[in-house]
Length: 230
Image (cartoon, rainbow, N blue to C red; front, side):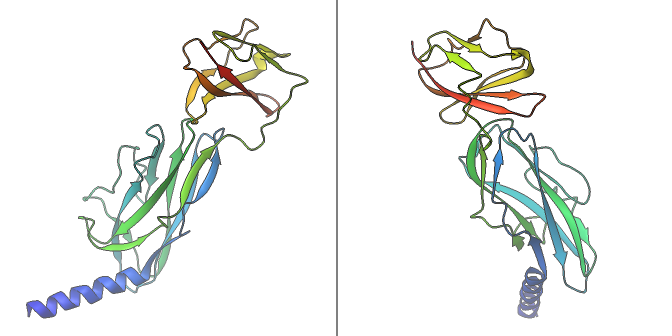
């Protein structure tokens, strides 16, 4: 009898796996750092003729920047980035033969990086029986905007190399927001109230940096590379 029940459970679980699926299959995406939040619409399909409960769980590689916020909004509510799995007491209930949407959210908090992140669905609250997952090979990349322009005629940044104060010579400087990234893509300085007196970079370690200026009104972005030395 026990053997029969075990066999029945295995068959039932296999049937669920084949009939509950996630679309799209991959979370792979390159997102520009000036996009404050990116949302993936994930469609969960239950092709079976019975109701299904499922629980979700977020997975990420160890190299995922700790500054990134990753969270899910399921059928019930939006969870904070500290919640990496659907609470055992709150399964998502899917009627038979339906497709419903959950959303996967990414806030980079302006930190660049690249990592594999994926979502898995389970049919039990202990996360043992896998229903489906997004592609674990899908890589999320947060990059500098592709629309960056080198505008050496209208903007001057000096001295380069710099030791303590970086001067930005640009008309209507107060229209711009400034960000300085390290060569590893880590946001080091952010300033919205720019003046002709310059930016203090004395606390930066020696190395190569990227200065990004975004016009708040014209949606124009320019960048300059500079070197910090003692």
